[in-house]
Image (cartoon, rainbow, N blue to C red; front, side, top):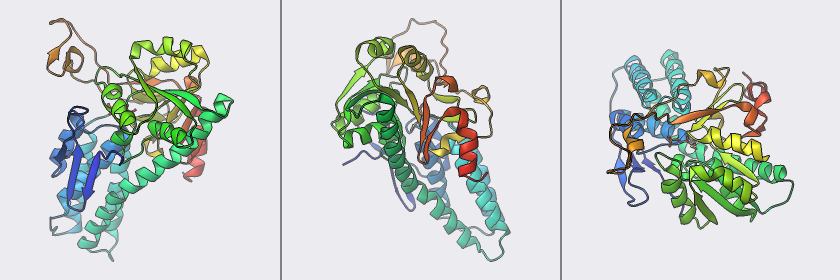
Length: 356
Ligand SMILES: CSC[C@@H](O)[C@@H](O)C(=O)COP(=O)(O)O
């Protein structure tokens, strides 16, 4: 059985508390927007697609039992609460894109006189619930497109060794994963010789979550520390690096988990193709470059402590950006559910695809 980070039935939402993994597997009820904001902000659920899905579904469970006196009241509720949810974590764009789409839907339904307040509520529930299935099918398509791109770029038919960073798997999405979906697909095709996952300090998504998924699915995998990547690429014949994204700018610059940028620099040095795997909902064509991406800074404690145990000297200053921006020039291709794009053609090709 595959891991499930989000459990949802109409009116009921639960998330697997990722702060407790891999020691404990415990689901937490999310009863509304306030709970949704907290679990996202505390990183009990994390990963750009999962953040958006849990955010929107937290509003769905809040709205479900309520009776609204008018469409205007419901529209105000939707707009105010979605904008609040966007503020829980600023770097990943998926929640913002989902919020904007749902707010425009609410605006359109409010204007449409043929739509009752109950129809409007039902439509909102249908659209948010559909996000779960859509994310899984997008991830499967990313997996297939990415496995092909990795094999082509390696110049051989596999099996290949790949490196990934952070957690982009079932735990970060509705299921299957983005970059980890590419790894899963390579494995399904019997083209994965080995996957290396980084520890991903300071929150250890690699050691705690990706390693957990890889062991769970019995993939051939090895954990390395972040500081070992250069040595790994020199020694272990890695065919490609595949990572996820929190926000891809129009020019292909990509914000992802801190440490991604230095892996891309090292990959370039060693001539190893560096791929970003992300759904279209992680691509922000509104910003021209990565300079415009807000980078979330997290509490010092995530660096100074592991769990309750202090590892840093008391009194030391800390800088803890949760993400960095990899320049487009270091990226071989951006793997999406609609194909693989060269960063310099991303804007034109995606705009054409979406008829923008
Ligand atoms: C499919 S998840 C893509 C990204 O969100 C992932 O690579 C990442 O950076 C996650 O960061 P996190 O801080 O754990 O939310």
